[in-house]
Image 1 (cartoon, rainbow, N blue to C red):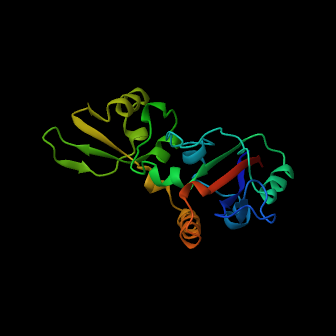
Image 2 (image 1 turned 135 degrees about the vertical axis):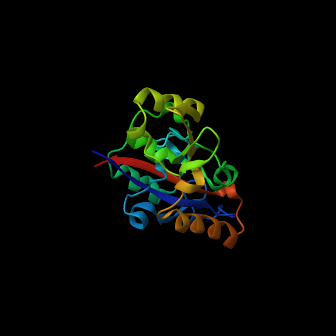
Length: 205
């Protein structure tokens, strides 16, 4: 079982007093399901859904915004989902993209691989022995837990240092395309970043 990501890129027009604008001026522009095929690896890091890498999510569990475009609302009502959130471009611009995950929350190899860039192995004198060792194979489970907490440990006459991933390293896949949609929309219409956003909901496969 997994989840697919649905939703829209929405924007709020500068002059939304005209009758053609509904939902306090919010309009839907890009269908995330069509653009990304339901695949959104960033969902965990933005919204806390299936957050294997244990990053502190930017906008978890907000539900739907009070006002939204009619297109997006009808799309949401067409599926069965109680799990929704949204985030503005302003928040994404201010996010700490150099943030690292909370390794002490990692409990499985899969989560470790999602959160860690590499584990380095040194001699006690500081000479690099191996740039990227498999910590879960080379170290006992309780030692891996200690490494997650302290990030540098000594074990069996070697020193191990974990190098966690940064949030920007996980902003891959279709994220650059999505980011360009958000920023180009802001620039083209000279919108405030608060008036460009992602509205998402998650559907069980």
